[in-house]
Length: 283
Length: 318
Image (cartoon, each protein chain N blue to C red):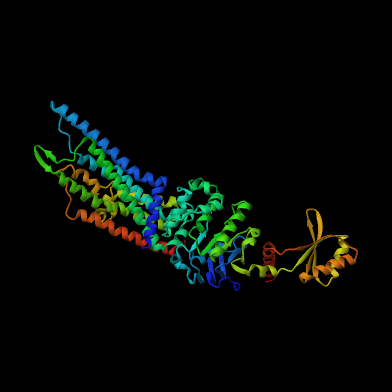
């Protein structure tokens, strides 16, 4: 596969540049920070509740799952979405800007360049996501245990069930983040400058994310709906409630499958369009 | 181009036309770069040199005509990954990566293992900069790194657009020598565009002169230089007497007065190179005091100016 050389080169570039390294660490740091803040708020809330009820004994600490989910689907994930959009948006246009796109065209076919760049960016994002996952999990585990949720002596959800929910949310939520990168690659193929690419990727995405509720049923067919960026319907965002076993929160029929499938199809469509555009434009 | 080196063509343009909104950038260009040749691509700014290179490498589709690289359509140039080295549009380095990482990235993109670049870096005085970020290099340093990159994978065709524009004369000579040596050593082809004609003349075996999207001259350089009539520069007293003798001499086609550094000289264009001796004898016979009589070496610069002058005259006549 000739795109593997581009993929390897892309990973090499992202791992050696300062911006690439910062992009790996920022989501993890933000996720961990959010866990610490959420833990502090929870502790304050528990202390207030204990003081108001006049209980002499401290309330038992809640399991780590809720805090972990807060960190995983919160600011860290939002920053990861932005990084996905921008990394994708810069992937081709930056090469054109600095004059190295011609060198790429001598090395590999344009299709391989588009696919290699997209796959390289996706692998980079997966590594950043794993870092976010481990950072939030580790931070949550500092003061809490990943144990079953028990209310009034009744086990609402076992630890095994909770891990399963986390796995399902990750499996359904990650494709939308990766699709953001592919959307960025499409914008990168269309635009002619780095600034235009950044604006072209971030502005329409943010506007659609903010006003997705106005789209009605059509929102279900947009990957933006499943990206953890101001979207209540994103699996990673909803995990926060699911992990706390809120009675009114559960995955709807086919919701997770749709969350994985829609971004997957749209990612392929974005890359196909990017390839067509790149093929027609001079290097 | 008939005077090839190995016969096999590394790059060829046949009847290539490329039009922009402002007119034709290339108006039916035929150009051949044989393997083993160092082809100098020269022409005034806007002549179409860079466009010809872009079309030749499949980076730009021609409106008409055909471009091939190693006999295959230029649009499929990726099939020859690693066989073509390029410096076009400036250094094109990743500013956030070090020099060494930039070179490794280049090898990776071609699916190659990292190559030891130290010998090339040392030749161009870059060895101490291997760990410096490309964004902190001067323009000249960055161009030299890009030259190393273009030679790194031992390509069979190297295309360089203005490679020495930002280099001092000494470094420009080293850089062009390095490229020419690397090409000669493996029988590779080198296509170089430059406005520094004296430097180019030292290394080029062939020449293509473009003007307004057309090829004005093309061929092996010694043959083209031989088309310039031999000439003598003569410092003599009295100058008018010398001029009269020269104008009467059957071996002299034309006499011009030159002013160089405040001194007046005569330039005598000869019908044949062996007429110099009889010219000297005629001046002595006329009791002209000859202080200096120097054969003029035909240069690429002279060839360039004459070709453009002839083109301008032809255009004016048309």
